[in-house]
Amino acid sequence: MTIYNVKAAIFDLVFTVGDTINILMTFTDDDPAFTLVGKQLDIDVVDNSGNIIRSFTSAGGSPTIIIVDNTARLYSLTPFSFVAKYKFDLQYMAGSEVNTIGKGNVIIQKQYTT
Image (cartoon, rainbow, N blue to C red; front, side, top):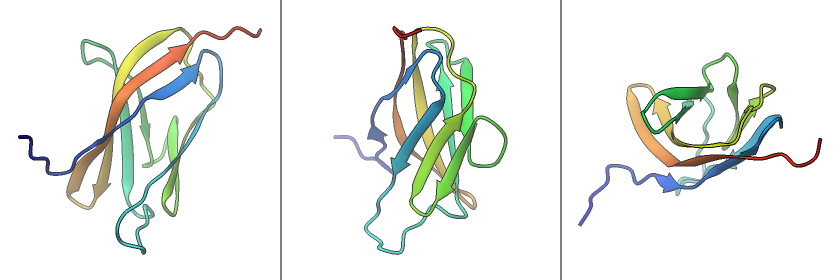
C-alpha cells in the first residue's frame, strides 16, 4: 500500500522540434473558489542523470508559466532543438507549502514539415 501526501497526476508533455512551446493546463479542486493566482508553479525538465535541461516557472523570467485563475500556460519562444525523451515534475507552491502535483515524460518529436 502506498500513502501519498499529495498524489501527483501522471501525464506526458509532448513537443515538436522547432515549435514554439505553448501548452495550456487547467487545474481543478473540490473547492469551487480554487485559483492558482498568487501561487507559484515550477516545472523542471531533467535528463536520465538528473541534469536540468530546462526550467519553467510562474515566478518570472523565460521560459515561463503564465497563470490565469485555474489555468497555467507553459510558454516559450525558444523551442526544443532535437528529438529526445526526458522526465519532469510540476511543483505547486503557496507560501511555505510545496507539493509535487504532476510528473511524467517530456517527449520531443521530430518535425517533418520544413
